Image 1 (spheres, rainbow, N blue to C red):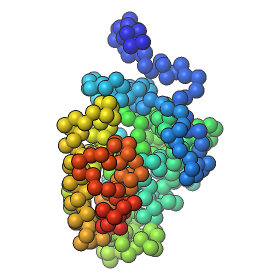
Image 2 (image 1 turned 30 degrees about the vertical axis):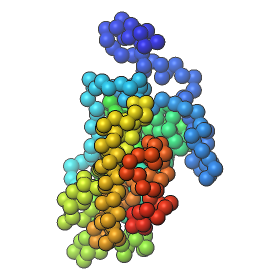
Image 3 (image 1 turned 180 degrees about the vertical axis):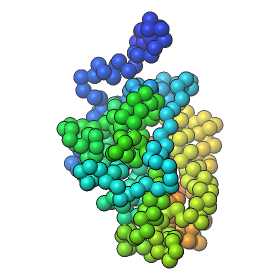
Image 4 (image 1 turned 60 degrees about the horizontal axis):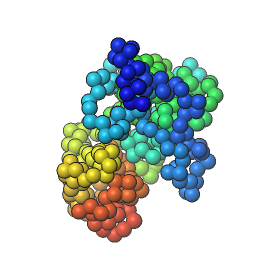
Length: 354
């Protein structure tokens, strides 16, 4: 079949249509979630649902993600599309702006199983922005990427029946984009553009936008722990202006090594569960960082004096270890593994922190 694909593309003068056309031949999208998120309970096991290939967008067309195909190591000759802020120049989103029907102008697409998206969801709650930024939560992934079985609740799809796939947002923003189909997405319902699909950037955008409101609407039980700024030091924020550099440094030095270890975990899986030098080095850096964080948090409640964005990001990253990473990446048998974070007593301060 690979030879047929190559011949097909060659006849078309090198235009790679074989893989995109295969997607259009599906009678039904493979790997669709069997239940909506609301129908799931603690006994629901998505691992028993139909399997599917991971996909991405290449010049606007859905294709299998080459990173996970046949141990592919070749680099794509198509540069990925960058989705940065598409709103007018300036520091803040104007959260008071609404659509023609009175609904919030800005909308989030997230998934509960993704720690990056969950950190954005938590930021929205901590900053009290639920009424100012609407949100849809994915029911799961499929052979066409993240899917929302009951549709999207924002423009331009809110009046449409049936499932909504996240790749539609990417195609709407840029019909010829080359990109992963990832959550979270901050969506502009007025311009039908992606403000950003970078979770760390979205967290900062939301925090700055909340500060610009000049009033406090965050939950009362958060007020005594979250960072604040403003003339009277009473505006909640996750990224205080006078700490942004320090927060970025903390993110680079603490959270990023853990996220990089997740990347080497995928490297381990796609290489047939072979412990390459890259995988071993990534694991040792991860275990060293867990020990360093355990030591550091033994002396303080948060990474800084109060709760900041880097705490939110780190917390959701740590939650994934016991829930997923230890077993999926077979880390329990690794040198350096001492025990779980949340369900054991090996890391008491990390456990309390998370």
